[in-house]
Amino acid sequence: MATYASMKIASQSAQAEEKRAQERRKALVVLIIRHLCDHGYVESAEKLQAEAQVSLSQTDAADNIDMLSILQEYEEFYEIRFQRKPKLTRKVGAGDMRSTSEQAKLPNVHRATGGRKKPGVPGSNNDDEGGGNGGDP
Image (cartoon, rainbow, N blue to C red; front, top):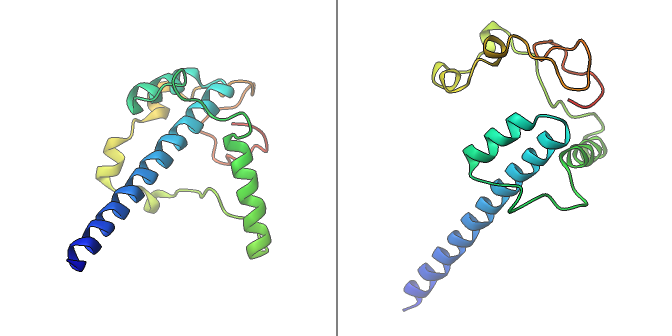
């Protein structure tokens, strides 16, 4: 009898953990969509909403949270904990490319858009290498 009860508790615990993981993923998608909308990437936000089947009209980010504040808090935490700034991006060389199967799943943004300009940043292209423009994307 104890074995059945322990198996039932373990199953319920696993189900609860999976539910929390799904809620986290949905919250992350909502935060990303809100970030895209707030920074002028409306088409991308609409496509992500359609693909993820999440709509900001049904679920939106809370008033006190956004992706930039999360990133800033993470950077502060990391710097306090490890006495150095976190490395958030990396340069990708020819030998560092994604696997062929991963690469095939991704659209070729540079070829499809012709180096589309970033909104609000005159003269900047998305295909620049630095990425560290010090401002919003």
